Length: 347
Image 1 (cartoon, rainbow, N blue to C red):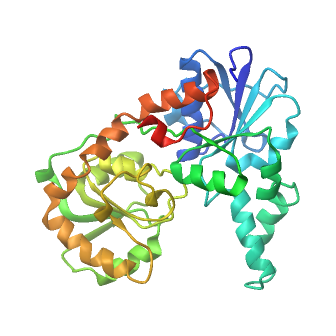
Image 2 (image 1 turned 90 degrees about the horizontal axis):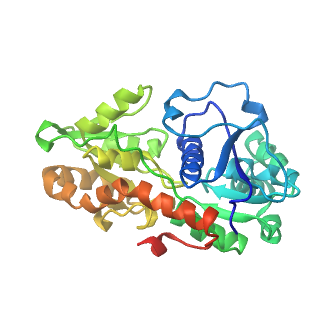
């Protein structure tokens, strides 16, 4: 499949500044760099929002609407997978930027919890169920819709989608803009400072804080401007992420580029070396000993900071090369029609 004869429309949430919408901007920008006629299309519910100013660095113009003709392609992020049935002629693609937070699988989990009697009449279960299952976009439905091409942002998503939907997805990741994140000399760092995002396993990190020695300082990354986030990552010793890693998350990469030592839990993409290629000893196994392990690990890592940071040099190099690999991935799928590749095909 090639798309040289038509246009590529990428549906997105206008005005939202998170990793997903930025990846969608990156996709359109790269497609245009490769000579494709590509456009973002704001979802009708978000069309009145202002565009994110920080994304002006991307060549990602908007089209007012999707043109549903046979020579065109429409890319849906997983947040809008339930709307793919609106397209009758164009080739449809679903880009799984997240797994744990995708409404398809979230609805499934909540539905089964509800029918198992774990809770009754919970709004959090009813809303995704009504949207996903009423429209027939269950994993079972997606398995039968063989006309959809599935793209995945991480190897974690590749394995999950391949297993649950009985398809061979294609890796189209994203990349980390590197300009902001310049590593500072280790002598200028506060090695005792551990930073974290409370939205990523914050309740577990609270327990780790309580079990850690008082010499360790803690700084949540919350309520900060972009410049403050960058400065914090450049000044800290450790970035700790014990969250679920629903996709290949951005902040661990930003922290690593900034020269911090990144420690993650083996959850979601964090369990996949292809997604987070840091040493085994820099990943924490979830379970009953997770808190104690993290609390014991941190002082040891801080005491040997230079040596431990050096172990992540190859991860930093990988991040610096992400854009070049992203170009290969996009060209394979959208220009050359080479589908089904995973991260290991680009090693």
